[in-house]
Amino acid sequence: MTDVEPQARRVREAFGFALRNGKFVGGAVVVLGFLGLGLIAPLFFDHGHSEYVGPPGEPPSADYWFGTTTFGQDVFLQFTHGIRSTYLVGLLGGGIAAAIGMTIGFVAGYRGGLVDEILNMLTNIVLVLPALAVLIILHSYIGIKSVPSQALFIGLFSWPWVARAVRAQTFSLRSRDFVDLARLSGMRSGAVIRREIAPNMSSYLFMTFILLFGGAVLAAATLDFIGLGPTDTMSLGLMMNNAVHWSALQLGLWWWFIPPGLGITLIVGSLFIMNVGLDEVFNPKLREM
Image (cartoon, rainbow, N blue to C red; front, top):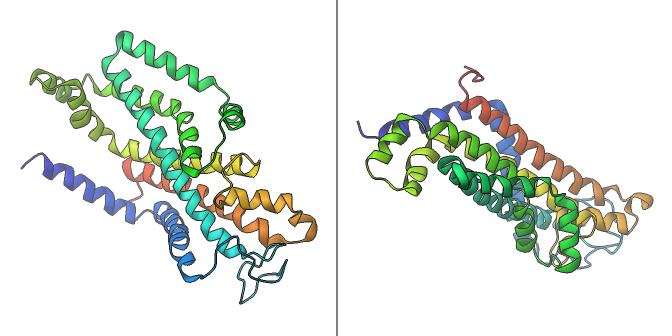
């Protein structure tokens, strides 16, 4: 039996347990459902999310499913476009944080010594920085003009806890026999990390990315809500900002601010539930047979 076959069998077993885990399946259905809504729904409209298409302040109806804003804009179309931005910033911001944190964690944990001390010091410095305050300062001087730039700023300040967690896991794996055997065979450090250590942490790394995704979504929504996000595209946080700015609560336009707030809550909550489910899938002691 080759080395690929046991790995493939473990993947199939984990996938089977995941499909039987109610928390993972339920969370995944919600997350994928919102993703599908954001990708597909705008294709059926012949107008943009910022166009004035109906009566101002129209409540939800057959013509306007989520009603209209005080300017006659379609709230449902804004909502679906906001989902796109939400997932994009989560993917990019979480991916950047994962790449930085995992790289630093792997190198620090595997190399140890002076390299570990320097990287650990860098991690602690970024960890104690007030991320929101730093993002506000950066926005004041540089400006967050697009979703990718917002995701970049979020990712640059979201990785320290990942680095510390991956470093601890790598410390425990680097002394295993299969790692020693790889070193003795002449394999370079980078190859050892990629081929021997990282695959044995794949489930943990995947769960970490899910948490980073949710964290990036929340951070972006916070920045958008306080008016520090990009304004050239619609987002769920910007929808809530606009609703507050134009007194939707005072005017009774509940359909303007409830959908984006509920959408963010459901997306982030479902990601957390998925993570709990995956923990049960990958941890035999928690697995529901």
